[in-house]
Amino acid sequence: MYVELNSKGFTYDVHSLVKAFYPGEDVIVNDPGEGEEVSIRVEVFPEEAGDSVRTSGHVRVWTCIGGAEEELTGDYEDCDRPAVKSHLKRCLYGLLSKVTRKDLPWGTMTGIRPTKVPMKLIREGADDEAISAHMRSVYLCSDEKIKLAKDIAHNEAAIMDGLSGDGFSLYIGIPFCPTRCLYCSFTSYPIGLWKDRTGDYLKALGSELDLLSGIFAGRRADSIYIGGGTPTTLSDKELYELIKGLGERFDLSALRELTVEAGRPDSITEEKLAALAVAGVSRISINPQTMNAKTLDLIGRRHSVDDVYRAFEMARTAGFTNINTDLILGLPGEDEGDVRHTFDCIKDLAPDSLTVHCMALKRAAGMHEYLTEHKEIRSVVTAGMLDAAAECATDLGMVPYYLYRQKNIAGNFENVGYARRDCFGVYNIVMMEEVSDIGAAGAGTISKRVFPDGRIERCDTVKDVDLYMKRIGEMKERKKKLFE
Ligand code: SF4
Image (cartoon, rainbow, N blue to C red; front, side):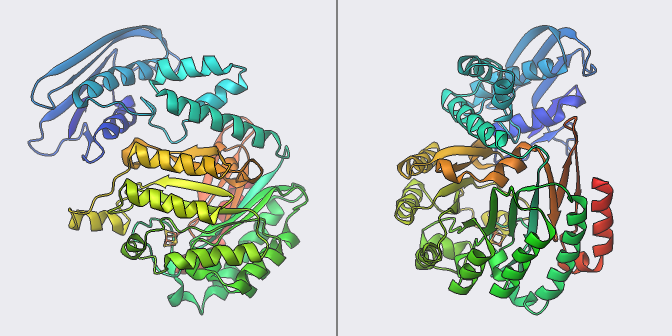
C-alpha cells in the first residue's frame, strides 16, 4: 500500500497509523515501487516547521481504498509541531476509520508506551477526569484503554516513588535455550551446541560485571534481572556462582528484586531451583506461553503441559512465593476457546504475576516464514482474548501494573503485566519508564544511561556469542565510554 506524504517529518507517524489500520499490508510511505498507485495521500500546509515554531494551516487526507474516493480536511490555528502532528493523526484516523468501519482501541496512539501520557499528567497534578478527557479528545482512545492506562500509571508511579534516589539496575543476558521457539527474535543459541563452552561465556560475562561494579561503586542496586535466552540452561553450580558473584561486586542492601527467567519448563530441575533459592533469587518466571499441547508442539517448545505443572510444583516446594508466568495471545492456530482453556489452567497454577503478550510478527522470526508458507493457519488476537486475560488476572487477585506495545503487534493491542500488589516486577517498570541507569552484561544486551536532564544514551553488545567473547575488550570499552 503506497502512501504519499508531503511533509517528511511526519513519515513515522503516518506509517504507523496506516499500519495499525492495515496490519497485513506492506505500507510504504514516499518510496513507491514501479507502477505503484497512490492509495492514501496526506498533505500538511505549511509543509515543514521547526519544533518551537507555531503555525496556522490545514491538513488534507485522501484515499481511494475500497473503490470510492474519500477526503477529509481540517484547519488548525497557532499550533506547535506536536499539536500539528496530533491534528494530522486525528484527521487521518477519521478517514481510515470511516473507510475501514473500524475504531482502534488506542485511537491515534501508536507509540510503545501509552502510559507515558497519563504518567506525565499525574506528575503535573492533573486529576483522573482531566486525564481521561485529554486521552479521549487528543488521542481518541477508548474508555476501556484510558482506564487501563491510568490504573497502570498510578501503580507504576507508586513503585518508582519507592526506589532509592541514586539507584541503578542490572540486566544479565544468558543467550542459551533448550531449542529455538518458532516465534523467537531474541538472542538465543541451542544449549546442546554450547554446553562445553558456557564456562568461557561466563568468564567473559564476569569481566563485564567487574567493570560495571567499578562504574556503580558507591551506588545501591534497585533490581537485577537475569534473562536471555533461558538462564536455567546453565548448571546449578554455574547459576549459584553467577548470582553469588553479584553480591560480591555490587551493593545489594536496597535491592527490591532479583529475577531469574526460568522460562522453559524443560530447563528446570530441583537442583537448579534450590541453587537459585539459596543464592537469594526473589522472583522467577516460568513461561508456558500456552497450555495447549498442539500449539506447544507447533511452536517448537519441546515440553509438555504436564512439565509446566511439574515445574510450578517444584518451584513452590523450593520456597518461591513470587512466580511470574508469560503467555502469548495470537499463537498460530489458536482461537478464543484455546486461549480460555489456557487461562483456566493458569488459574489452577495460580502464579503471582502474569505477563500477557500479543504476538508481534518480526521478520527475523521463523514464525513469519511459517505463516507465509501455511496460509491456512492464522495468528489472530481478539478483544475477547484480552478480556479472558484480564478476567483471569482479576480472579487471581492481580491488577495491571505495566504495559508496552511493540511494532507490528497483532490487533494493535498491547502487552500487559498483571500482578498481586506485593509482586509487581520492579525491573519491568524501571526498564519501561527509563528512570535510572541500567548496566547490562552478556551477548545481545543493551546498557542505558539516564542523564539528570532526562536524556538517554545506550550502548549494546554484539549478539553473536563467539564474537562477543572474542571482542569482549571492545564491549567493555563501549560501556566504559557510556558511563564515564
Ligand atoms: S525460550 Fe525465549 S529466548 Fe529461548 S528460544 Fe524460546 S522465545 Fe527465544
